[in-house]
Length: 395
Ligand code: AMP
Image (cartoon, rainbow, N blue to C red; front, side, top):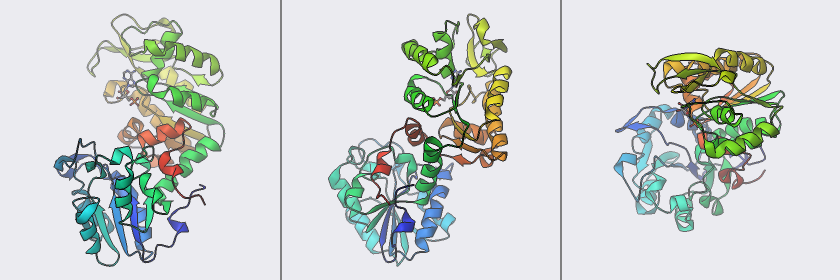
């Protein structure tokens, strides 16, 4: 990575302002999944070991509309983080102004302060310069460790870098190392697997990946539009008429790389208890039925490709994996990635629903890297430079 990290700056005696991604799921004030908090711990431990004057943590949580809203308060995160670090974590009721400044001033040497949700200020998402300046005034150095927010140019991710030297934390570094290396200099064969609901969400991803991969496996609802573009009946399946021309073009351009499903599990209703059966894609989907998963022959054909792969990137489930009768394809792909990892291949899960899928399959610890940022990793797969990365100091 050509960006400076916390290893490249002197942190001793510094007020270290860090943008983390503590956008955790909450039920009331209970954190139902603390993955994102745990992901920040290596960076925080490193900084703590280098005698900072203080650590000030900024994050957003949820999508509060038009100002402070207790439903989206970061307050529950402070005790959770304190427990993980074994160290007191103070909380300030605002991320700027007198409340933040007072709390920061009252910290003991090396103390940690979590600042309230940055999105309680309307200027945050507009990358308001004045807000950024006030945030920056709390620190001497800025550490960007919120990979999941790095695709957004906000005051707390990009704006602050105008006023403070900005470097990457370890989570950021790890995400970029895996994703950027896979995309720029992959060990080959390099195979990508794309799934999920719609083609239209991922047109740019497909276009960008076709220029980089050796094979691109397509599953999930998005495959249906490709079937329809080939004149195959898809009946009630999710398919996008407005994306048919794009799909035709991609089929032409990517004919040597695209691998589409050859069979599918179809259901006669969008529920787990629906009647379901397997069909060959070339036979078309009968009226009243819809495609909800890839079939066993497809799994075999994906397996053949994946067994040769040295780098694999996966984004999007192969079917309606939330329903057990339509989860076999997604689970099989998760297992194939775990198997391939054992052979030394680099396997990367690109965030979002594929993370839930690999966790459901109990295989999260058997792949190389699971990205913490769905949107951010998709934008990297699209070949874009993330603004929160571009703003960091070059090495
Ligand atoms: P995405 O956010 O684009 O990755 O899409 C994930 C969603 O796509 C999941 O909720 C899946 O249930 C859904 N999905 C995957 N395959 C299909 C399909 N064949 N038909 C309808 N929905 C699907």
